[in-house]
Image (cartoon, rainbow over the protein chains, first blue to last red):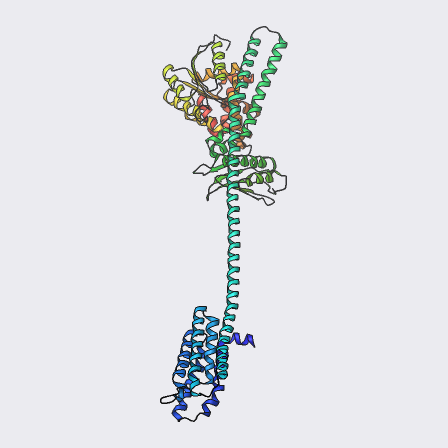
Amino acid sequence: MNAWLRNHPWQADGLLAAALLAVSVSQIAAGQASPVGHAAFAVVTVLLAATVLARRRYPVAAFAVAAVIGAAQIAFGVQTGGPGPVYALQPTNADVAILVLLYTLAAYRPRPVSIAGLVICLLGSAVAIARWSPAHGAHPTGALFAAAAGLGGVTLAAWVLGDSVAYRYRRVYYASLEERAARAEAERDAQARIAAAAERAHELQDRRARAVDESAARLRRIERDLHDGAQVRLAALAMTLGEIKENLEQSPADHHTLDLVGAAHQNAKDTLAELRDLARGIHPPVLDRGLGPALGILAGTSAIPVALTVTVTERPSPAIEAMAYFCTAELLANVTKHSGAGHVMISVAEPGSGLVLTVTDDGHGGARLVPGGGLAGLLERVQTVDGRLQVDSPPGGPTIVTIELPRHA
Amino acid sequence: MTAIPECLRIVIAEDAAIMRDGLTQTLTRRGHDVVAAVADADALREAVEEHEPDVAIIDVRMPPTHTDEGLRAAQAIHKDHPRVGVLVFSQYIETQSATELLAAAPAGVGYLLKDRVADVSDFIDAITRVAHGGTVLDPEVVRQLLTASRRGDTLAALTPREREVLSLLAQGRSNAAIASALFISPKVVEKHIANIFDKLGLAPDDNDNRRVIAALRYLES
């Protein structure tokens, strides 16, 4: 029932208006005035009942109309002296509409408005009783008080009832406000956490890039130190030993010493070669001249003919160049060892913001990424800078390994 | 080498003092005149301008960038002073740099791995050849060229002895040097060379430098 009333406000108010009319029908019927007076009375009654229909949408206007009618009734409907009361403005049962509208004001409008409505109603009641009693002079004081208390009580009750409904609404409204505030705060918290996490990720990325760059720079320094230090000293030593050896060969000498010097000379030369390979493995110096020349040397020393295309307009960071170089070296070594290929194609391009390295061979295929394998090692290395590695190697070949690298770590 | 050593006027450009001093002393002991020993490319240019030496020995990596200053200086000197031989020596073999250097004008140009200083007489022999307008290419460069050559099929048609001859020829050796290195007579060397050029489809050429270039172009193509 309640739910139906809530869901069908127009019908509910229609029923209310109908009920108000219904209780007023006997009054319309019972009057002894002229037909015009009857008709006018009926119009006023219907108007009063009709205000109820507008109560939800225009509560203040509806109340004002009802209050004006009520005031007119008090002014002219209960007149004691003079020309006598106007029949049409006699109080009617439909005046209950005023109470309904007061209730509506209290329930749906701010307190100051509803209090104003209450004051108007109470004043109206007082004036009505005051004007009413002289006409019925016989009324005892007790009855007057009872009437005042009754009318005032009913008015007050209507207001209190409405106000309590408003209070409930307000509580629900405040609760929803509170909930919304709490939700907003939680959202703000979550956003702050996300922002902090993003900042942290950024910071870690920066730190990782620095670490990668520093490590590349350190390797380059080590190679240069080897080149300027140990390698040069060893070459000078080998040269001196070579000179001693040749001097001993020229003069009739102690063969044992000559053999010893010969062995030392050979050792020095072998060590030079080993040191060179070691240094090149740390950082190939040709990388300082760019990826193109460095890969050119790899291609030039490959046992399998290599077709090399490097189309890079702007040099990536040294760490990325080194990574591309070592990946190519490893892939080329794989091709030589395992693929049975007759030709290799190496290309480095920059289709987007990054670098794409492709190594294609016409071997028998079947290369796979297996944990602990060479390709998996490459993948791991590439992933340290958020790079990607793809292997396409169907049985029977060809094998295409694609590595994508950013320009900077 | 056994004959009275000729006195060459030499400029050395090498940024590592120990190697610069070692080379100077060794060459001086062998009767050569090291007219200047410098540490960078600019000083090298000045020394060459000033002394017009027979040969300049140039390290590839020198200040300021330690990449290929020496190589570029060698190319410039070779262009501006064709009579000055340039011998570039490098810690690493860079086939491309070596062949580029030689391809421009092979007369009086050499490219050697730094390690070669250990075999003093061979090294001085190389300096002498360059000073005399010859060509010197490191055996390792030649080996890499032969390995990586896309002409593998044709090269496979060569006999092992012909490959040896081709290798020495590409290093810039004369017929006589090849003959003595392989313990065969110069006549046999000539025959081998004729066969090689025939098999590779190259026009025979008696000029040592030109045939080095022909061989290199062939191997690189």
